[in-house]
Image (cartoon, rainbow, N blue to C red; front, top):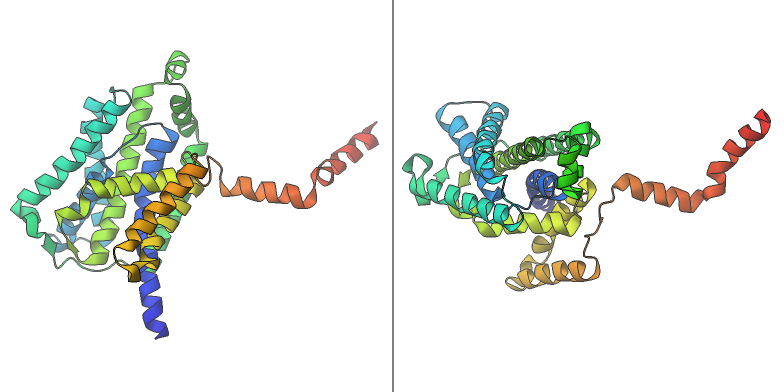
Amino acid sequence: MISFEWFYIEGILILVGINLMVVLGLSLLTGFTGLFSFGHAGFMAIGAYVSAICTMNYGMPFILAMVVGAVVSMIMSFIIGYFTLGLKGDYFCIATLGFGESVRLIFDNLQFFGGSRGLSGIPMVTTFELTAVICVLAIVAMVFLIKSRQGRNMIAIREEELASQAIGINVFRYKMMSFAISAAYAAIGGAIYAHYLGYLQPMMFQLTKSTELTIMVIFGGLGSIGGSVIGAFVLTFIPELFRTFAIWRLVVYGAVVILIMATRPQGLMGGMEFTDIFRWIKKKVTGKKTVKEPILEKEGEQT
């Protein structure tokens, strides 16, 4: 009984990790660069199908197949981004929506990828440990990126694009960089997904999947890596917790999202990180005086 329960929980945690990979990439694009996308299910599908073909037909190791899927997805993002990143606001969002649906229809009609029946017999090599390691590495890489000069330039573009361009930031270049990295993250999530389920169908990557991923980003808080982690964790677990209520679980899911958006429009984290929360707790526990006292003593000694 215990082993069965752990197997079930482990499966949910793997799904959390898969969603987290895609949400991290989408958070970079939406939360830190200010570009909304409803087509990331398309990049996820590219990573899933390309990696599956590599492992099934060419016998590639999973990690190498995952990298190939990410590279192909990045190449597609360069092509799509070249024509769409000049669009403003909702127009870019609509363009990515069209891209996501186009990718799904291509996989639905090409027999090389299994057509509407999908692919089966994909090696099921995804484990909880492997997913956890990939997610941790992805989070660390994202933190370093956001704190780097490139990350600060992306945030500047989100805050004020014209001012960023005026001070010499190559806006198109950094938008393209954000879009490509975001696509790679989505493809890695798709590769893990394919090798966890062991089969793929185009209907898994419909518009509803892109919408679900975007909701996770907004739910956790735009411009927050910690918020992405919380959003992926909570909104993956909620449908599973209420699975026994059948269709009502979707009502509960929607109610929770509406409640958070109504009471806290900036999301749960609201641009904050876990380090900010820990710093706030420490300040409340220790008080400001305990932090400043050593400095005052040193200044007194010097005088």
